Structures are given as C-alpha cells and as structure tokens.
Length: 84
Image (cartoon, rainbow, N blue to C red):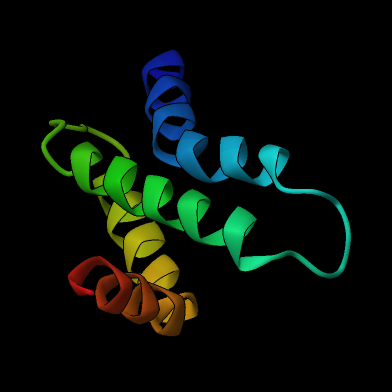
C-alpha cells in the first residue's frame, strides 16, 4: 500500500522534478530554455491525467492547477508562437 502510494507520488511529480534539474540553477533563465521545458511539463502532466491513480489523483489535480496558475502567462505566449 505505501509502496503503491510512493510510486504514484513519484510519477506525479516526476515531470516537474526532471525539468527543474534541466534548468540552470541561476536566477535568470532565457525563454529559449524555459519555454520548451514548460511545454514538456504541461504535456506530461496532461498525459498523466489518463493514468488511473488510486492514491494521487488529488495531488495530480492540484499540481496541474498550480502549474497552470503559476505559468499561465508563459503558456499563453507559447500558444501565440505556435499559431504564428
């Protein structure tokens, strides 16, 4: 039971943890580094919604909501650049 929870927890937070490791540890990050990572995180989190989690469904919903709220203006610029 606990191992199942930990495995789901790891899968839920993996996209953010991996992207955080890829970005430099500096205070400033260029859009060319940030935007592709944000897009990857968004896609991976969206794909996780199709997984049938037993323990971490609420966590996944909260992570997705927090991610979109925090990076909404960056995602908007990604959509504009895709259309152009």
